[in-house]
Image 1 (cartoon, rainbow, N blue to C red):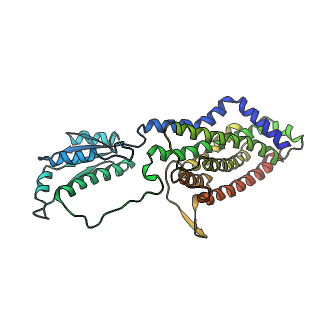
Image 2: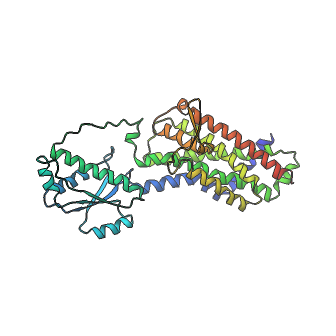
Image 3: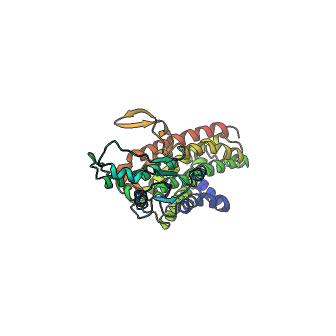
Length: 379
């Protein structure tokens, strides 16, 4: 009964603070909208500048091949533009207004014409770019592959080995926007670490905790009641973020309800981390500052924004346990990618769900114990 009363009290307080609640609900949808605006065609188009010094027509024909490259949706893969000056092109590369400069030499056509008569005749295609730009590698590979295809066609060269690609699930037909959505769903949930830690700390800072203790309320009652209202907010946030993504063109390959289940369990784990933050906070402002520390781990070390290599620790029953598995969002990212991109069901993400449940119980237990030790005994 006490948990229910605290749950309703926390829910009312959240509705009274419209600004904070709106920010929590809209963070995920706003991120999805920004990514959609950033990638209006659904996938990134890589800027390739071409300095065509060829004296024949082969250079122009190779450029035409590059311009035909497209995604499965039909959107262009390369944004090909002709330049006349290498120095000016390098300035654009430095400013990251383009990804690659491809230089076709003067003897390109001549080399292709004479290649069948002599295997010793060669010509050099030059690629220029900032190797620290993550888009350079993709743009350079695509541009050079297009030129290679053209050379193979003109010279009639036979490839002794061909490469066949098999896409898992519907991954081959996904736009880049589709690939970002699972991470955005996770971001909408991890923001709860601020809400729960600041809400609980407010009870301490405002002196409400002392008054509540007169009702023989325990740390478990207080934290569970507030956590339940925050978890409900998290589920609504996931739903809102997902529906905004769908409205902007996202297509899920798996069941949305399985994805919501993953989001709900993730919210429980994140709230557990928020309890630990609240245990070490004496004021709302302090809780806000401390909450940034786990938030950075959730966003940058879980794979929600950038994919990271797994740091393998050991193996149990054929399942690899890595360093970042202690971060709940790590399992959420894997599960949502399986569901939304590969069309997996509950059975396929059972390991991730079990891991999230275990982490939720662990963080909740630690949070309640720490809060009781640091705050309940002190009032």
